[in-house]
Amino acid sequence: MRNFRRLLALFALAALLAASGPARAATPAEICRHLGTDDRLREIPFSLMPAAVRLFGFGAVPAAQVQRGTFFRCFESHVLVCNVGANLPCGKADTSRDLPAATASCAKNPGSNFIPMYVTGHTTIYQWRCAETEAIAGGRIFHVDPRGFIARFWSPRTPDLWQAPRLTPHRASCPRAQG
Image 1 (cartoon, rainbow, N blue to C red):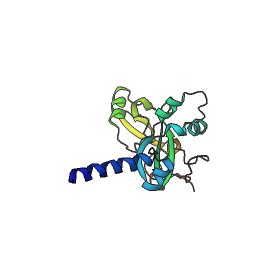
Image 2 (cartoon, one colour):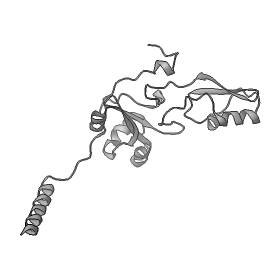
Image 3 (cartoon, one colour):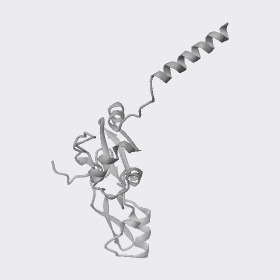
């Protein structure tokens, strides 16, 4: 009798789950409202491809390609969007003033007034040069947002589907920022 009751309860639970309909994936806005601030990069859902195509001006790019390279993260319960594109990193910025690859480049090219980004990496926020064989981090070429990402690569405002605050560069990491 006990097994019969368990089996009956199992069938009742299965019927209840089936009646509730298919599960719906949470939207980026719902995820961010729940998480608040979360630096993990997530692919945007395919249903939001039209908005991403408009946002980044990718009219002729296949939707699947846009989805593979477009990510969102959460900042203060809002959605921020980035597309990696060519040489546009979505990950955290490299604020280090000591890059071994830059030092190695200077050893091979002493006195060079420019170290290319293929050497320094595209996440560095500085323009690099060589003082003889020493790599020198020069002026900032990118500002860092309060969470450590390169601010200009993240779209804080997408009027149709993602509402987000306007980010300003973090003063501690970008002393020349105005505002």
